[in-house]
Length: 79
Image 1 (cartoon, helix red, strand yellow):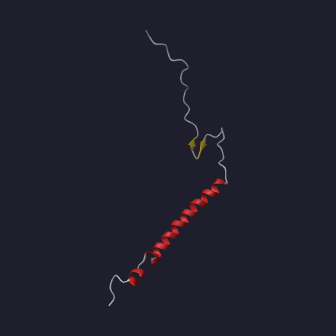
Image 2 (tube, rainbow, N blue to C red; image 1 turned 60 degrees about the vertical axis):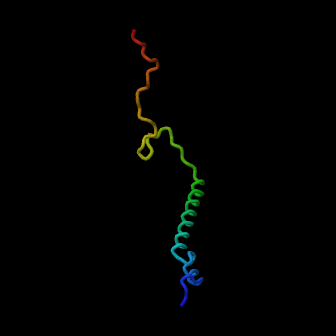
């Protein structure tokens, strides 16, 4: 009868013999490679600047809402 701490038993249950861990490692490395690839591809394309005439980007106003300008001089204090 074999003992529980036999070297053969421990080697069969080693982490590198677990296919789920290899699958997880592969998915992790593939996702990192995808992120790097997206960054490299995005560097090739320049951002198009917003034109001064455009008033909205995807429905969001480019500038602040129009408001009356503040008075040039503050009112004189009352005596």
